[in-house]
Length: 259
Image 1: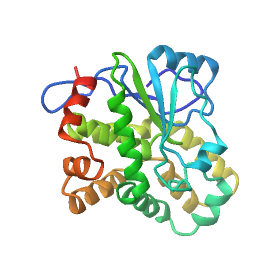
Image 2 (image 1 turned 30 degrees about the vertical axis):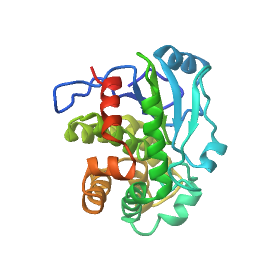
Image 3 (image 1 turned 120 degrees about the vertical axis):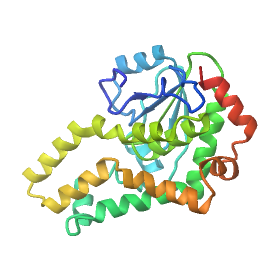
Image 4 (image 1 turned 90 degrees about the vertical axis):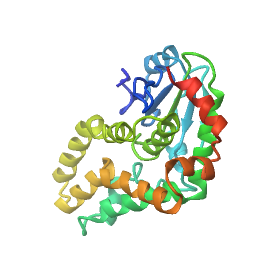
């Protein structure tokens, strides 16, 4: 975890091992939640850390509601995964959620499974992740980092981390563990939100669904993997054929991001 006071789920991807004995370099890949609440000290810390690019996977509505506080000298890249709205509901109000998620206690879980399928099949998502790789390939200086995020730093960001680390050859089980680490990072906030919802009289069904929306689950990850494996022939074929990441790009990425 990075020491950032005005945000949650700020994580380095450095140090993760690859299948062939390398490790991901530090100060090259940073995954986070939103940057709207960064303090001036946070912004300076990220600059000092080496962040040179801020990739924002959020929708236009999310961007407008909570614009990033981009550190000085950092290039901002807006790459929305979803065409208009935040399909993950990370930015929805409690009133909006209560209207949709107070009756069926599986509604949140089912909704998130669909979100993960969309992140693999939607053209806007494929375009965003293709452009993400172009951004990674352009980050060719030592100790300079690409920071990438959505609102909660768990779904669109989690799939972005999956793609990046898969291209680098990180062990799939390690990638999966990194994905699930979000639950540790967000647990205090989700527990607080659950307590507030109960105090406001919202029912247990709503709280169950809220937890499903605000956390990650192995089922969500597996839903994306199933689509990749059954419809696209596996992760490497998806990277090559859908995101247009060439064999040469893979070699370049490994030179830039692996020790």
